[in-house]
Length: 59
Image (cartoon, rainbow, N blue to C red):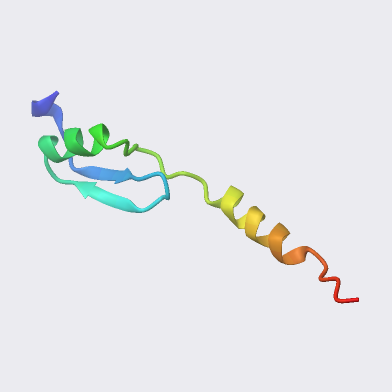
């Protein structure tokens, strides 16, 4: 695998991307739970919208 390695992006659980320039960096990120696909932030955005949409009862 090391000889076939190509630098690529890896993402943490929040969707922040980091570039794995070496195979060793890739393994270290994988060990920390980083993945190859960027997690969808749509779920997070929906939660914020629903939270703001609640009517405020001041009476």
